[in-house]
Image 1 (tube, helix red, strand yellow):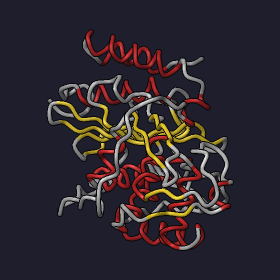
Image 2 (cartoon, one colour):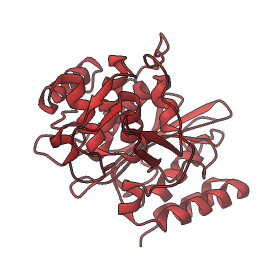
Image 3 (cartoon, rainbow, N blue to C red):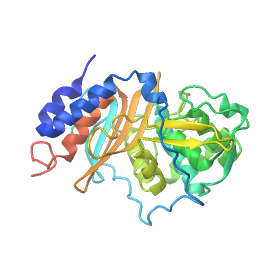
Length: 320
């Protein structure tokens, strides 16, 4: 297996962090792709849903970074496209505006729209269509009833497609109507290279986004306290109204293994390949990295995050 990030981690991080990163990646690479995306159940305490509506986003959500010129490509060939951002400033990237399939990174928009609806305790009745949705799933049954907040946790942690469709149908009556809302919101956020064809990110003609657009979307998601808190959870348990429990383990293998990593979303389809949006914060410095169609997303994401968190140097193009 090609592991381009391995050498870069060694070159870009202090010894203690390098050892921690190497251990994290070794664990992640030992997990088959299907397990990473589907998340195996674990036994954990039940976490009750918050009452009422979702916490409001701060008045000033961090804006997307303005368009930049050609960025230095510090990691050539690691992905079909990638972008690394530090404190809102784009550092490095390649093909950042290329329209590419986003896989489950599309669920970031689904999650944002659900939270913006503001009805965390609404009860959702799962349709037969939602229950039959394939890919990574929770195993919901038709007519099963769960709160919006519970389904949102399943969407973000386990990347559950059945929960995703159930939320889309709850929000707008049908997934088709919800997708229209997704595209309208993308327009409002200035995501010019993004078009959705489904709520969950399955490969579909005409569905695409870009590393730059997904970074901007991720900033808005992180600006929502409820979403930021969920994305940082390694595991939790939700329950249906019938008291059936579902253990959720986050598909982000870097959480709890790489210091400072606090989100955000994984994705995989045959058409998109392995995708990742990873967020981290350490010492007051925020880093966001987007990888689309990555060969070794775990190794390379850690290399990018660690290098971006290191003090700036003239050599890496971030000043002295």
